[in-house]
Length: 193
Image 1 (cartoon, rainbow, N blue to C red):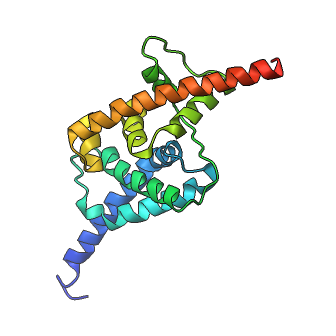
Image 2 (cartoon, one colour; image 1 turned 180 degrees about the vertical axis):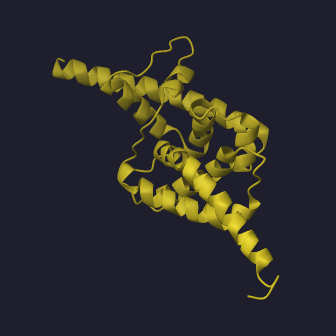
């Protein structure tokens, strides 16, 4: 090998790979959880996460390691979940994970933690009812506890728009929780349980 002929490209490629490997290792679980909460069915999470990480690898040079990774990765997960929904590869939305904070956000005066199967089902149903562009902000802020400024930057939207989406998402979520609880209560009354 000639001296200096391949040193720079090899070092750059090595640095790209190291940066990607670090993100993949530390954030795979976050990406999969985010995809689930954005409506990707469990059976498809691994495939969609793979698509997310392929895109991340292709754009790894745009990632600033001095900034938090999750807001940047949130945008990739959001776009992949949007495409997933648009392609209608799923029959019914499912969501799992830590939605307890979401329910508390919807009912600031009544902070019940979902502890039963019915409570979790209500939260999952309500979360699925929130439009995706609002849901992504709600999840990032309430579940992932990302700062709003980073959410807005990661999604490429103005900060005021992010706050507006959060406000509307909380309203949508609260109304959906209420409707789901009423439906479940009526069903329990009909069945006598």
